[in-house]
Image 1 (cartoon, protein in one colour):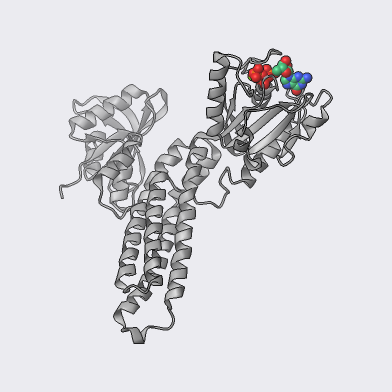
Image 2 (tube, rainbow, N blue to C red; image 1 turned 90 degrees about the vertical axis):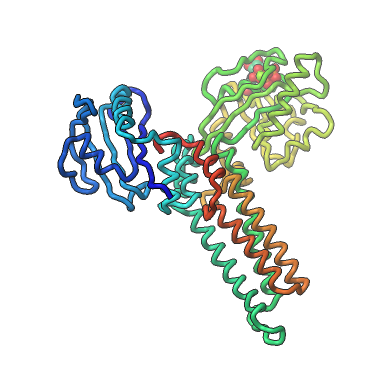
Length: 454
Ligand SMILES: Nc1nc2c(ncn2[C@@H]2O[C@H](COP(=O)(O)OP(=O)(O)OP(=O)(O)O)[C@@H](O)[C@H]2O)c(=O)[nH]1
Ligand SMILES: [Mg+2]
């Protein structure tokens, strides 16, 4: 293996700010600190020191604070040097140019974290969580990213590996003993049962990947209903601003309108859509309705708004089946006027709320009920849930498949070598999650999404 290079990058944003941090990692950190700050001896390990950064030509670039840390107990597992200068991007640029002139290599995106992973400072789930922690745009996403960063998912995978190794040892005991000497403590039915339970756990964990988009992009809540029901009025009322046009004319909203909205700890993507009728009146309305249907199809939750002063709306056949009670709230709008009795009796199985988008009456109740419905129906993950990403889910599915194969073979009294082999494959799949892998391409892909300097 070639000796690792020393890399450098700006770890803070290249905009005028109070301070900027230039970060280095690699074997030359101590020597570079002595060179650029003109010190014969370094300040102690991890001690902050003041220094004037002198470029190769001798000019002082800035007054800085710097910290040198010896490896391996650093972020990257290597020696590191962190230089804090004034937050003018020009200064940071000059420092980086000077470092490059001294043979320091500009870091690739995610290269510090990649080195941390390769040097065993963190597993792959933690490395992925570094990006998640930086990019989380709401409290829930941040909570889950930070928990993964702390190693929660890695520990869970470790526990699964232990459990599998235990089962594997018992299967291998069947290989080592002739049939008549089978250890009575692990009958095949019991082993098969344990594999089934573990496989179900893997599958359940894999299913949590569906929460990734909810956490990253927000819960997609779509406001829909017949024309003139007050959908746009409800969007405006929830947002607290006149975002969408409102008028007494049916067919006001043509395209859909999407706005982010914070609801408790959640981020919602609230979408107002064109009014729906059994048959559109013209081409523009047809297109608007098609767009509304597309939004409804990908929604996590629906707010079906009707004008409660009128008889219930009619939609095209089969449409209401797309709006199950677990994912739909019926909003009986215009509660400031007197209601039509048939409207109140509409869709009796759906959670419902009478409100007035015009006066704001019932809006607070809607927020409370919506929060509750999202929690209760598993649309947002609960606090305890461990959330996996698509990469983890693929590996977990593969592991579950191998366990299913092993189980089938045990139940069919196949020679124990065969299920043992399936379990080895399952272990390898689990290993990919935490990163006991040597797939450079996969690592390139994963770290390419990182920022430079992280
Ligand atoms: N009295 C009363 N009128 C309301 C209420 N909500 C909306 N309206 C009125 O109903 C009419 C239609 O409101 P919009 O918000 O444009 O309805 P919409 O469902 O978005 O209509 P389209 O975009 O045409 O499908 C407007 O005249 C609103 O002022 C309400 O709670 N009470
Ligand atoms: Mg509208």
